[in-house]
Image (cartoon, rainbow, N blue to C red):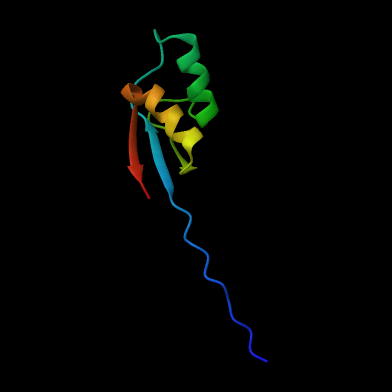
Length: 69
């Protein structure tokens, strides 16, 4: 008996870079940046494509540079 392998879709996501300092931004926006894992300017993280991550990116988009993977 032969086994068939299931092909899983490749995990796509975002590469997110903090382009501006969060100094002077609302406290909730700083919490969103911590939730994304961004702490220092020019730091880059990779996050999966999900509705929660998209909402977080939308809230602080003026501080970020986002690239699709």
